[in-house]
Length: 442
Image (tube, rainbow, N blue to C red; front, side, top):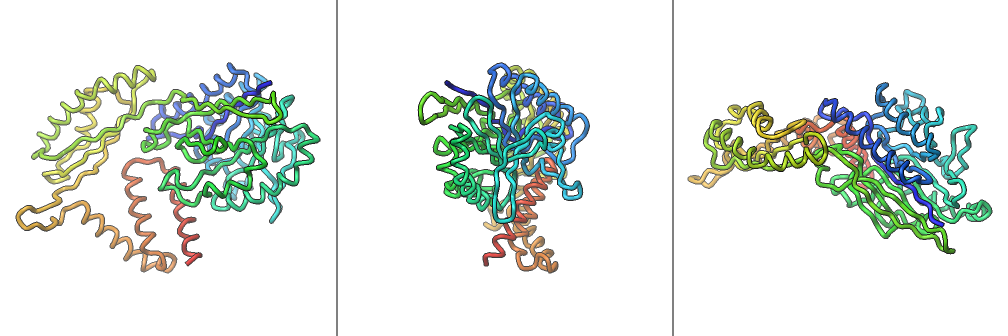
């Protein structure tokens, strides 16, 4: 006997990326297509490891998109087992009632959350009367799914307590005929993304090793696996342009229950996502705005076929992201961003265009051998010193003015690059937590 389920994470419905309606719809289309695949496969369950929504407060259309997708799963007899991610959790002012709670109460999905009684973690069965519980038994399969929502920096400690709780439940599992266990967790593994701090290390998952057969992760948008045990599918659409190179999607997991020791096979499937084409254009040796624009137009024509292939494969124009690199030979004020965007539109299909300035102005004076005052690196150092000086004047940040100055500098770059405000806010919260932890250990 074999049983199949899908493992999805980081759907981010409601992401009005670049303030573009088509990008908003892309996130819903991606999720809807995965739901279609679940129904075609007649899977036993549909698992979502957090971040169904892009932000805590959603509009009516985003709620409709979620209800429509989960409603089709329900009509097909497929239970949707979901945990809250950091983007889903309610504001404290909302009495900690999230939109996932609403969807659970309206029977659109099954929201799992272990009960946290101070120092003890407890997994209660999910009950249709209360719409609450920490685990759900998939009918007629012997598969049990446990769920722990987002705990941020406290996740490592929570996993230790979860392992203890599950070991105490062994006898109950045997009586219930449980043969295979899945744990839904909205967290990542430290080191997968160097820029993402505060996550558990790989070894901090080990308290679950002997009590869970498949750990279904979310939170980190880059796909990865460890030990044929920890699985993270990545986001179902591109939340930030930096993610474009990652092969993200979802898992179709088949569990073979024919032997005494059930085994699984997890296949990572790449779902259709709008292409993000990221290129670099060198400004070296282009002595005037007119010459630069002429060369840029020719460069766009050279890249047209790649953009057209991306549009044809997806069925819609790609997002074009161009980084201007090298050394700019004239005043930056003479560089017209709009003219560059128009050149892209004139020569290739593009839903949205991002032009990023990663160049220096004049970085070296060959006659004196000294750095010119307009050098971008020198500017960055000066900027850091200014930020550090300003932060040092504020008692709240004075003790950590150096680390906070680097956070502020990166915050500025993320904003200038057009990164989504909600993503920036989440990143800033993680940096705040990281610096608070580092400060407490010194």
